[in-house]
Length: 490
Image (cartoon, rainbow, N blue to C red; front, side, top):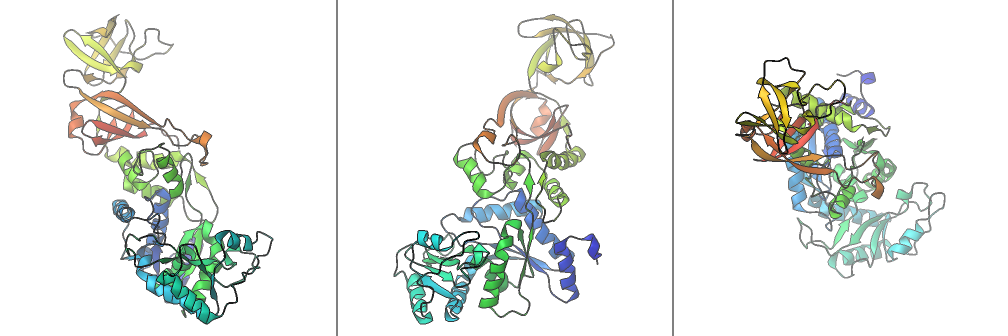
């Protein structure tokens, strides 16, 4: 068993819970309205790691209470990404599995006089909430008789009222300093087919109501979430305490979310980049989605090592992008085969033979200390022969083989059997920081060029290192994506 002083605050509580005989059950509850990103990998990793370490289990539960934005394709994509990352779970659930249970729990609140149907407009309810330091105002429907509220709630479910005509609100405290406790809406009418339940339901629970009660139904021990939900914790506890009688209810713990420099996390922000055409889709290699990282060539273990390295705390931090690149580079350096690719080709002729070298490896007016090719200079074609440039032609350099000492070594590809390929290279989507504002979006973050590769490229499956240039992955037989450069910045 870990010493308490050596673990983070969540794990410390897990250890104490195990000592009391409690079974550890964690959960990962994404909404299926987009693709998983690297922040989700950290969240699932924390929950899964605790369950595995302390003999518990993990539930994957899709919090699907907003049919306007959710789709089965996102459920499938998230499961695929989790499997690829090596993150598994014991049970698969959906909040929509509990719709009937949640409806009955809402009825329990009504019977206790702790929920009421409100016919006020959305703008009126917003105005009633007040503001920070400004107490809210009670609705005229707040003290409606419980029996009438039961009838009206049943009418909401049966379709007697149009969308938006009324809502069910919890009756808590309109003067609370916590805005979340000021009679929150817990059910609304929405005639939108659900991707799993179809048109069975005309009313849907709000997240703040469905989430804690779903945790309770599953006997979750530790409900771990990002710091943005800290102010929701009193509401989380209130719903469980007033809807259920539990000896050991779930408890919520919050940790800081993962922020990476020059990277956006947050599905609504990522969707904006897709909608505006900045990227080609959720799996664009520039995206911090797991599917995008997979296309870019990031090894799954490198991703998990990186998110684990960021730790668990309540202090918001932003990690440099170079830290992620460090873990990717470290993994690939151990496994990736090396091949020769000329990215900015310049033809040289040696007798009847033709070769491709890099434009950057030749200069007619070289700076002091130049160790690559120039007119009259000698270099070595890597692992082949020494050559001297004797003349510059319009379309090629004329060279000869020589026994003279060389000044440096350059790589090359034999033009006779070179494979022409398309190269996709990427820059971060943001120029700096994490702010998604117009002037900070790098709209030219993708560069496409042609290159020549040695024929071994046809036999490569997955990642490889292009000599002197960096790590890449094959997207197609003759298309490669740059994963990360060779230069370490971290």
